[in-house]
Length: 222
Image (cartoon, rainbow, N blue to C red; front, top):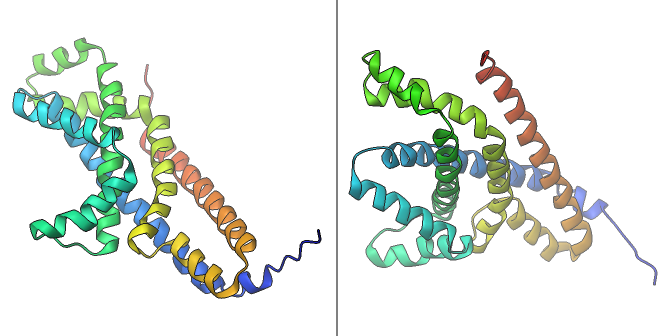
């Protein structure tokens, strides 16, 4: 059976594809920032003396890790309005990405923090530093350095997860692809093209994270 491929009708819509790609990158970066804030704050609470705080963080991690992302984003978008909280599709996508990524970031960062020898904490306290300063200046940075590859993998996964935001009509690359597919009926060409775009975006993210690592963690460890 002859296959008649025509990428021209897809590539001539490149302005829409470019805007969709930028929207996807924007969603991913905003989600990563929120996830990182949640990850660091969650680990700080887990190391605090607040028993209630530790229970809340652990419950949050288990809730997010044991429910599908699609259900999470539907809950925020469709269920929260019943409680008077109505968010736009874009804000909903960022919040869902941040919460989902934050739960995994908590576990990843916690692993790095627990790998830091207790003697470093004791040394910091012996020098007169406050517990918060010890966590921020002595524990957090080397912990992030040790788990950095895992965090990068998680954040690249978060970038690809942005495609699910199309289920609530958020504007991003997959929603643009669906529109072009509906107009052209060139399904193979459309999704082959955005597959290459997602591949390029993932490669770009990994390259930027590698450059950031060389700049932030460029200090001797011994």
